[in-house]
Image (tube, rainbow, N blue to C red; front, top):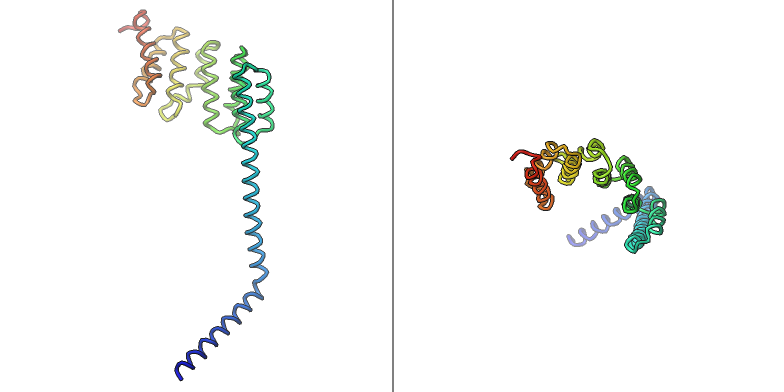
Length: 224
């Protein structure tokens, strides 16, 4: 008798649950279906977008490598044309990389002023990632060592010479080189000493700084 009662109770509970499910389905079925459809469509959309993005990035990467190959082969005009096209139609980081490589080709071709202007424009472009803006600023500073004043070099590089900057070692070096070139030996010494005092300075940068300090001392430009 007890078993029959238990069986009866289970059947009643199952019927109740079934009735509840039917009521829930009648009230919320469309919403549940709509939600499921939305999830499926969102998944399809994301997969499609990822595939499109990967395809665009791959195509842009191939175009960039092709332009670099042209440059290595000495076909600078063709390389510049390919880089200019990539600046306009590229994807992801490739347009700004194309701008930077095009500026380097300008410098290699003798148009240093045009290259400096191009790098400075990149450095001032708020849409470009900060790391690339800083790299462009530093590249402009190195080009200005031979053609510009110390003040021009400083305007590009001094903000990168702070202890927090990842580019401080190269920034200090370019500032020291510019000061040395303009025979401001006391200022040059300050920048080279800053390189040597920084335990994280790369060995090649520190070696060059020490060499120039020794050269200035040996030539009587600095006191021992």
